[in-house]
Image (cartoon, rainbow, N blue to C red; front, side, top):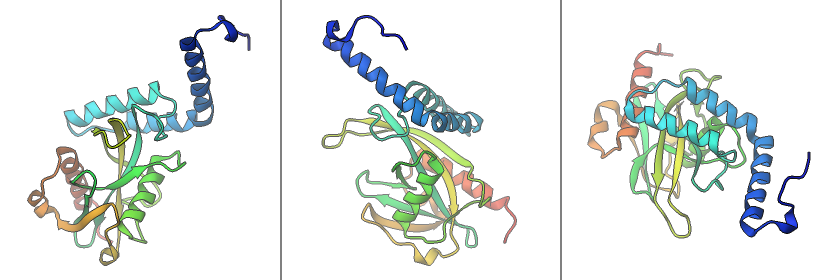
Length: 223
């Protein structure tokens, strides 16, 4: 590799910062490039259900192509997150939690902790936040498939600036619904029949995801 102008000792502060950022980005591309490309591939293949999800798809793809550290929470503009919507196929119910910080009814999920596959993030976070020990991907245990994608802004909080969560969402099933317990992040958790979903004030993206889950359950043979 050849040195480029300007030589470091003659460079301005802004030029030095730009050079360092470029070197760091190169390191991320080297270490996470394959993982980010896999995310791009799965998101590209995902069929959006409505215009809002289609817009989220384009935002996520653009962010993945622009930021090689998109899988890490240190990506300041936003980062990939993984979440899981929990269902009980037998009773045809869905489990939601009231997020204590965001003050909203949501699925479970959060940031990567060194994982490079969002489905692993979704499974770990959902297990931690629901205490359910038997969670499995649904309807195929061995093949995690994207259920939904959603790009949304997380408001500024304390020393963290406002930023995007590029959320990749998966469907998870339990056969021990009675073991579900709220974590410190949840003020409350609640099992609901699909017909009762409208009793909660849900964001459109959450409602869209739940309706997809309902269709999948109805079209999956009973065990």
